[in-house]
Image (tube, rainbow over all chains, first blue to last red; front, side, top):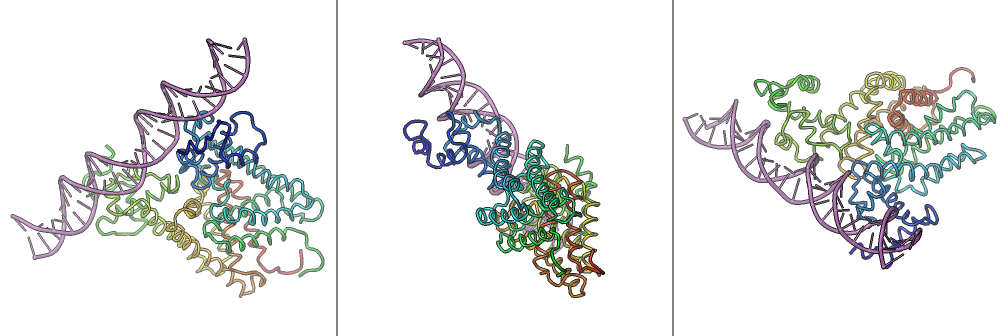
Amino acid sequence: MVKDTLQAETENTLPERSKWIFHRCCGAMPGSEQTRQLLLEAAFNEIYEYGFQAASLSRILKNTGVTKGALYYYFSSKTELGYAVVEEIIATSIEEFWVKPLRDSGSPIDTFIELMQKSAEETGAEMLRLGCPLNNLAQEMSPIDEGFRDRLERVYASWRNSIAAALEVEQQRGQVRADIDPEQTAIFVLAALEGCVGSAKAAQSMETLYACGSGLIEYLKGLRVEQGSRS
Amino acid sequence: MVKDTLQAETENTLPERSKWIFHRCCGAMPGSEQTRQLLLEAAFNEIYEYGFQAASLSRILKNTGVTKGALYYYFSSKTELGYAVVEEIIATSIEEFWVKPLRDSGSPIDTFIELMQKSAEETGAEMLRLGCPLNNLAQEMSPIDEGFRDRLERVYASWRNSIAAALEVEQQRGQVRADIDPEQTAIFVLAALEGCVGSAKAAQSMETLYACGSGLIEYLKGLRVEQGSRS
DNA sequence: CCTCATGCATACCGGTTGGTATGTCTGGAC
DNA sequence: GTCCAGACATACCAACCGGTATGCATGAGG
């Protein structure tokens, strides 16, 4: 029944949702790469909602209308599917949302603060309920699976480096205090950011998110050189 | 075989580990409360290692030598066992380690920093690998189980309040800047602290833990009123 | 000495899990 | 028309899951 609904006439016809994914992710895709992408997106959602260990392949298959044979044609195991989600969904979305804007920005600290606000606005509700996908996976899987740890840490490193570079740029321009270590500060800023999201999720409270975000923003502004007289 | 090893002669004789737990937790216990406590401790370890959802009752039973009948005699379900772990293991340990020392301290901010260092020294290795038990559970279960969220948030609230109270005390003494809001700052400090532990866990790197901790300590010191001239 | 509740121990259950083996359909090369 | 590989679909599997029903030893109370 589900199958009938999903596979309308020809097998190239996919349900509306998958078409959206199809267009959003990669433009034209050869042959059945759509199926793979569909699975990746569904796996991401499933993992985001339940965590990797509790993520159910059957549920992913039910949600996509894809069968188990197809899944195991593209991914050799649940773990490999998880790895692919990290590398192809999570990594790229962090890259697009944080790393590129920070790299291309004229005043990166302002950009960082704007991205925090943008993130709260755009994905606020989802983030409040489920937290940060990257951090969720890292907390769950880092201690028990090296493969996940490697891949996740690579994403973190890229993110962290983009923050450190931003701080260094502003430092050389004299916009940021000379006595801070950009690398170390970047580590702390990223930790605090993830901590804020996590706290808000734990409390399921938007107020916590804002209170916490304000704290971080104040900290960031405190990194700037004091201008004018004391106050 | 396992059973033979564990139940030596009389059924009051418990393995060495459980005796240690027995003494550590509650002093003399009437009758079979030992079994309950043994289960709680083992369940805590299992949950700490794998998370709640992936925690296996069979593994807990294997590790303790207790049987399923005994477990379900004390706890009506896996979920109730989890709740009990939060209330009787996690809550009390946070209370003992953080809340009481902060409440009884003369200079709470210094005490807080000392507790951070003490925590890194005492449970550093475990914390590096597995993170903070409270935060782990909160991140995993808050979105999907209200019962967990309630109980965990209560622990967080107590912890947070003890930090806010500490800041307020120092503020009234003129040791801490008057322009900060103790409540909001406490939220951020706690978030940053959990963020630091989480980052170190994600990276599985002691350097990250120290770098991150230093960042937080600097932030805390920045809350103090500037003494002497500008510098 | 009998009773009865406490404190377990054992056996079993239906459901779900990740994983696999085999079958089938289809479009393009020749 | 034939062949073959890519792209799935179906059926099945052992392992494990949380949970339950029942059996049984034991010490205290009457």
